Length: 548
Image (cartoon, rainbow, N blue to C red; front, side, top):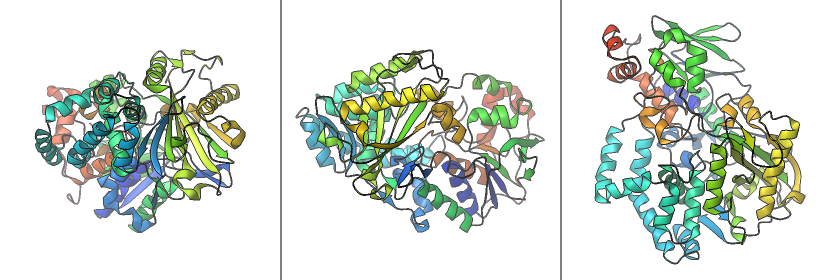
């Protein structure tokens, strides 16, 4: 009997399993898919000569993550590569905002849009250099982040904390208007905010756009050499060297709960896998509570809260094998790993408004990845392994374009949407379509079938909006991985701090499992059940064998 069972071998599940194994626990990881990795996988499914990242591709959060740094995955063979430029946002007139590897180069480029914008970006980066490391540490620890929060508070006081807090709470459109006179800096901030489901007018989108932009400036948008699957392979190798067991093709059908405590899981094949100490779930919150645990084991308040759970945008993705480099009209886009395609901040607002109205955007904001530019091992010299994705409503009410896309995602709808994405690329890179040797379409339903945590391709396991962050994630509670079921921990991006490949939700869950149970889980149960249940339940139970 293992000490812990981990449901799901995505990056968070594998991080959690590694940390438990480091503490001397025996760990068994059960993954429904035939291969591990969740949304961190690569293959040669588009063309045998091209490596394609099936889901995620660029990893600024992984580069900044203290969780992943402590795992020392370089010892497992993981290496990182960078494109010459981090990110570009070309405009139809040939101008291009470029986030360069060196801050001096970024400033010089933004100065071409408005002379004062070079100093504005430099000022943003100085602030980041002061508070960024403690901010990242605070984000990647359980809420509330006491130690890193105290350090951060001290530095905020020294750097005009209230004014910085106001800036981070701003909509990204307003932040860009206050900070920059030209379009360049505004484009970098707003495009980065829409890596999540945050419209340019959404409160807090300025903070997210600033965070992603500054991470790009300080850490780049690196990629694993050889494909994103190399990151998963390193996590799996490390786990196995420490005695952990990984079983793929093993779907968990339910969490076994006895006496209010999770004691193991039951697989779809009927096997009971007992857990001596803990069960950790790298699953969506809705799947864990509604499908795996069952209503009879959960407080009614939590079940009511789950009815209000909000997913982030759906995603539609296209992968290409290109016979040559992308013929961008704006030369600045050629060396960027990531390219944002939209007609300025107004185009981003229009795109987000269409999604909010339930419409398939007619001119989709497109995030384009040039993977061979970032890592030459991805395809033969002189070619490009590329992809693009765009966002869609979770529930489609209408098509703002001419193709009558309904969300059935039959062959006709998939091809029509892929053509629409290609048309957006063609606007900024005339001749792009002539380079396509092969393409693969990943519709929202396809993405979900390949990774059940991606509800219609929702890449953040729940909205990034303020009403579902920190103590509100995934429902109003403590912002911690403990659940109302003793010995059961939420270890996915559905938990604080949310989406992105950084391993923090898995690490937080592992650390919670390793601690003696006490005040935090008690408060969690109280917030979901009310004070009457608080006094009726036993405080805690020490796992057999004590705590480590």
